[in-house]
Each structure stands twice: as C-alpha cells, then as structure tokens.
Image 1: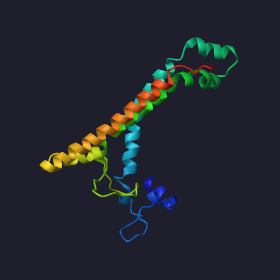
Image 2: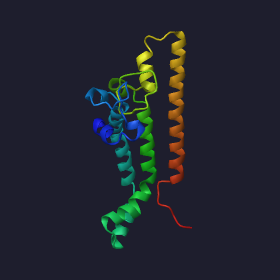
Image 3: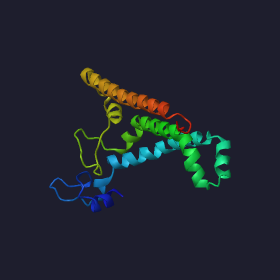
Length: 184
C-alpha cells in the first residue's frame, strides 16, 4: 500500500520516497518499517477502545425518545440522526480523545515496527522514523547521566502533551453534555 501511495501521490512531497541520489525508490524494502505503517498499526489498536466507549454512549439514549421518533414516522436512520447521535456526542468526543491519549503512549508497538533514526524524516512512507516513547524505550538502558536527564525531559514532554489532550477532552465532553441540545 505504501508503494502504491508513493507511486500515485509522489507529487505531494511527504509521499515521495526517494533514494539517496534523488530518484524515486522502487525497492519494496524502502517502504517497510515506516511511520505510515506504525500509524496504521496504532490506529487498529485504538479502534476497539474508541468504538466500545461510543457504543456505550449510544446505548444511553432514552428508549422513550427513540420510540417517539419512530412513532412520529421517522426511519431508523432518521431516529439515529435525531436522537442517538445528539445524545452520544459526548461519548463520541470522549472515546476519540481517550483513544488519542492511548495512541500517544503506545511504546512497544512503535518500537517493534519502526527502524529508529535520529534525524527528521519528512517522507512518512520511507523506512525509518522515531517517536518519543520509542526513543525512551530504545535509549533508556544505555543512557549516561546526561542522556537519562534528556530522556526524562522527553517523557515529561510526552506526559504534558497527553495531559493537555485529556484536559481538553474533558472540557469538550463537559460542554457537549450527554443529552440533546434544547432550543431556548
């Protein structure tokens, strides 16, 4: 899939995978262990968390209002858009933000997939990338005292990013309420 994207969307700079001499890469090994593949794996890992929270939020929609929508002649899809989705909006936002927070902390999955490099790779489909959590897992055992301080600072930065995401998710969910919006 990465090779196909690079072939047909190479006119977008982040999708162009080139060799050292600047020619387009055609070897399949140039597309393995990339940030794109790691992102796909992490997205598949967080989908169950996200969907289970959303499903629970959708189940909280009052049965009386569902039945009322049907009684007024609504179709199943009409009932879902008029009743279930407005009542589940907080769950949609909360599930998405919780899954994003989990994705930020995925260490081992990223560490096992990517080939760590220590420079910025703007080609997301090309082999080699890094993340803060994978950097900590990779370098912790062999770090000097100064390197350990740098890893602790990287961990603190990751923690602060996760904290900001969770606080913003909490405020968004609190503002959206778990019920339908009322006119007035």
